[in-house]
Each structure stands twice: as structure tokens, then as C-alpha cells.
Image 1 (tube, rainbow, N blue to C red):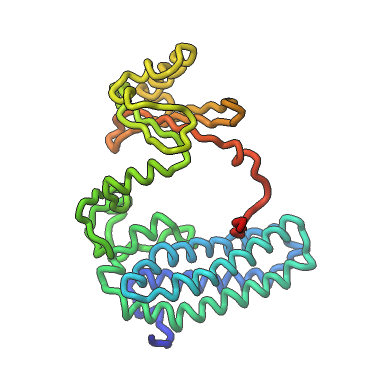
Image 2 (cartoon, rainbow, N blue to C red; image 1 turned 45 degrees about the horizontal axis):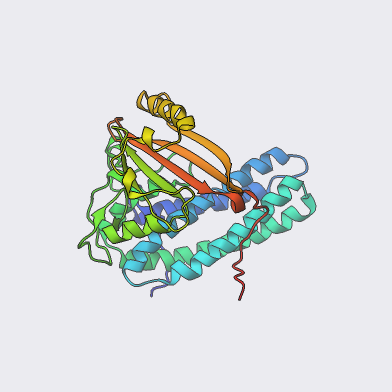
Length: 326
């Protein structure tokens, strides 16, 4: 692997590497402004600059979700572990500073800003001398061209998006759900179908529905039940007899009027969601309905989703560590 610095002027406008380098310049500039701002006399300015600096999360997210997968494709997996862990460490530092700012603990903010500066400076050094040069050696021109669409979904640190690479008109932007470009994948596409993003076999689709801890029922535009998942932990019992049945016959008489009203409002496009929560067998159940609208804006049915949230409702604080009982 090569270790040499790269020159920002060697890249066309919008090239993903050039954008990363431009963000690094912005990070350094924001730190200069931060260090020259007195937090005591100009707290609001300090707070605003720091918030801009927090947009480095988009820099991290693009690397983790865009750049690293391409590097993995060529067998370089170190960034996906080592550098990602470094990102998480910096995220912790940012989280701490946010807490100190919220508490206006000025005595500890400055030292933690210096710690963050040192961490990001080290990260930039590794990016510009190792990560980016090696990425340029590994990735093809087609790889870099593919990257813009996904990058746009995540976003950049700038208020104005960078130019597309290669240069395209803005109206040519394609949402990932409509992106049909074929890419080299590390698995066979035999027996698989393409979804909004990704490929699954019928067996894998069934696994997803079977193991999701939610009840899902799909009713089509003609109000007939097409599908329900048969997970082991269903909240409400279902049987195969409901497939093809009109949904109004699948609910107790006392709730049918509400179901029909939901369907009416969804079809008229006056509403897109409806939700309820009930006590059922000493459990707290969250029930939601979602209108299904196709790309042409046409009503295609409704998904009913029920979930036992008894334990979820009682969560508090944070749990960041795995602590399985042995």
C-alpha cells in the first residue's frame, strides 16, 4: 500500500476524493474559527461553528457506506474496521462536547475541543496519506462515477452540494430506488429478484418476514388480503383462510367502521398513516396502517403492522454494550 499525499488540484470538480479533501479544508477552517471565538463572550457564535463541525458525521457516513464497500470489493477491509472504529471514537468525543455545551460547562469544553481537533487532524492525515491514495489505486473510474448518487443520498458538510462527477445536469439525478445500473457483486444473482436496493431470493424474503418481530398484513387496492407473515411471535392470530378475503371481514364488527374509514381516506389520498395502541392480554400493542402509493401516485393498497412494544415502551437511558447473560 502506498503512503503519499495527494493534490486537490489533480481532480476534476465533484470527484469524490476532491470533495473529501474540500471537506477536510472546511474542518480545519472551522477549527480556526472555533479557537478564535471566546465561548464566554460569544457563546452563540461558538455554538453555531461547533454545529457546522458536527456535520463531519456526513463525511464519516459517506466513507462507511460508500467508499469502504468499494474498497472491500477489491479486498482491502482494514478501513471498514480500523478507521470505522476511529470514527466511532470521534463520535463519542463530539457527543461529550454536545453534553458539555448543553450544560454550559465552559471549564471543560476547551480541553475537549482540543482533543477533538487532535483526533480529526490525525484522521485527516491518515485519509490524505494512506486511505485516499490507496483508494485511487484500487478503484476504477466507473467506481468513482457510480459513487455520486449514493453520496447525494447521505449528504455533504457543505450547505451547497458539490458538482456531480462526472458532470451531469441536476435533472439527471436518479434516486437509488430507480437506479438500475448493473454493478459487480460478490454473490450470484441466480434465483434473486431486485428490490429498491439489493437482491433477495424468495427464501430470504420469507426469512425476513418470518423473523421480523412484527405482524404484517398486506391488503391490495381492491381491499383483499394478499399476504401476512407467519412469525412465531404473532400478536394476533391469523390463518391461511384470510388470504383473498375482503379485509372488512377480517376484523371484529366493532372495529370494521374504523378500518373502512382508513381505507376510504387512504384511497382519497387525504391520509397516509393511521395508528392505535391498545392493551391486549396484558401487553402493550402498537398498531399502524400505511397507505401504499406507487411511483405514479396511484393507491396500491395498505399495510397493517402490529407490534408488541411492552418492553420497548419501558426502555430508558442508553444501552451501548452487549451484555448477554451466560
